[in-house]
Image 1 (cartoon, rainbow, N blue to C red):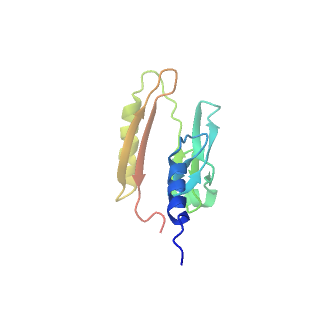
Image 2: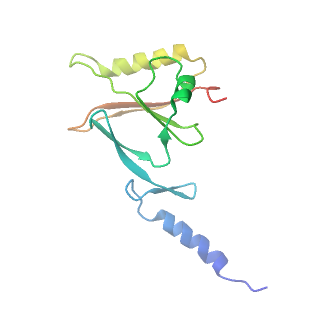
Length: 145
């Protein structure tokens, strides 16, 4: 049996291709697969966000199970497995409202409504000329079981 160099070259080519400049416009390699994104507009074009192209709108019957209260997010996108959701709500506030306090209160409300909730990352996103955003990740055990 001959020792072919292809066995060594092909993995190097794949690795090199994956490290080329990637962006939301061209896609990113995630776990060896090229994932592409599309720019979506929400809330009368107040918000634009890149969402993975394979994400779908969470079906209404599943929304009611995963988000049992009537205070569910206005936009809920999910992967096909349904284990990763991107939910977006627009809170209309006056100039006198402290949005950070609203976010803290909302997290507190989630904690009371869902035993065992685990909060992960928390970000405040602010850029001149853009809407200030607060984002946080959380896991609710057993909701997908």
